[in-house]
Image: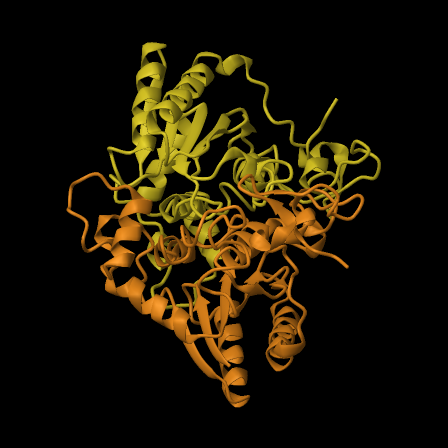
Length: 261
Length: 261
């Protein structure tokens, strides 16, 4: 495999960085090639602004989607963004590793998505016709590549269980797995989530490392999350509503967008 | 009212900035005091790092929660964070206004949450005993204050409907409304969401402005989202799972955490 790990934690002595090192070591031992985008060490710029688009006339109105599309088309995205897109093109597997802060990505990683996922590249791609609403959700630039999340939370697993106050972890991570990974075409593998990552460090770390190494060793056999492909007939176009009767009885909310057999 | 608007868009000629100006004007006309944290114009630093904690010894291990708690306790959070906390203390109503990028906050605003919501301030507060699991979800430093989101998306409303491919908008925004606003104690009013904000600008803008001005004029009469308070008896402590039988028949996922009568 050619694996890109996009990593977000400020401290190299952290739980997450140790896990990163273990993952890189095992990947390389198994004969894979690995690149790491270590966002803190790269001093990654997280903020979308006019400097991202080298062909944008400074000080004029900045419509993000249009400016991004034009810069992508004319190869005028800033060099740091292009470098990340090249890594993505090179990789067949992408891992996003981060602590879950306020139910979502740390800002530096959100800013990687905001900037690298350019218009014409990761969104606003493909035809709009009777059977297509662009290449999105299961289709797009990342098609054929696998991706998954490795994340850690301070809370106990029960807090993110079916009746837990935070909501089921599958729902909490849906906008990431489905909205950021499946959207541009990745095949999404289940996330690896460590709970109570702030406490009982040794035992928790050992279990987390075990889960990561097992994933690496067995990645070819891991069943992806079967999100429904947008343009494969399950959705009314252009409303993008799931056709009646496709979901399992009793399924609702995000669950109806996962195919179950 | 004393209203703080936390605003995230790079361009002062944008849809969102026009809406901000209209909101500020109406708020002031109605006799309210307004402060705006215009994150792009403030050049807000979005990235959590050791510079946030003035009493942290540089180059030593950075455990974010511990470092944040100690800096908050010893009044050694960086000046930009303290200034935002002072605005929050001053305000009785907080509006978060931003375009929804990749189903979530722009990085600069996520970084405002990551940094301003310090440990001991917005989380890791209050007792853990038989009836409390800290002051969280309906309790905490923001108790008694109202908050709501004003956001815009490029997609059509159907894409975020009950059967829409993105999931119901209430679910998409749950980790923001419940996880970032209700968590530190805000009373959460329904969000104001504009769809297709990239197209048919005049009509779309006019409707968005109308919704915002109506909200401002009628804010005292707006029913909040009735998220269940964590320490009020509905949840098992410390598992924080909703007690059996409290939800309406058929409700599941995030919906069970909203009280319906």
